[in-house]
Amino acid sequence: MFGALLGAALGAALYYIAPPPYRAQATVNVDFNLEQAWPQETDRQQFYYLERESRKLVEIAWSDDVMSQLSSEFAVTVEDLRGNKLQLSQPAEAGWHFYADDNDAEFAESLVSAWAEAFVAKTQTEIDAGNINEFVKLEATQSKNLLKERSVPLSSYLFAGSIGFLTLAVFVVLFIFPKNK
Image (tube, rainbow, N blue to C red):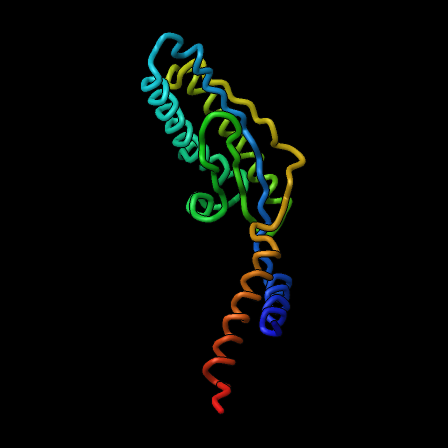
């Protein structure tokens, strides 16, 4: 029991000494309007349509145009944006969650807000150009005053520390100080 408490205390100390970056989340509502796009077709064609249009939108979210715009606006390289600053939730119909991680909470919020807005604008130009189905509708539903939290919660540090030191304590009791009498 002492090992678990000690591990939790060390996990908490590590969390406050070297905290994880902040994560801000923006949401874009994506509506494929399946009923209008495929009113008389089979389920198989509808699922193919959803998957194909989702892939197109993912490509737009990570496109060079969108990433270059963010890179020039925030002075962050495209490699850093794609590598460790930005994340996109599992895309499907309804809310797409855009995430940005940074040590500065305000910067993370500004970055993810700009990414969501750039995604909506670029997608709208692709819809107008006819590259994406005209029935697809997008709206940035959460791009201002965003929730900013740490990317890894304190509870994960507490849990990992307590499990790690509890395991270590068990090995110490069993193998280093055995009670063979």
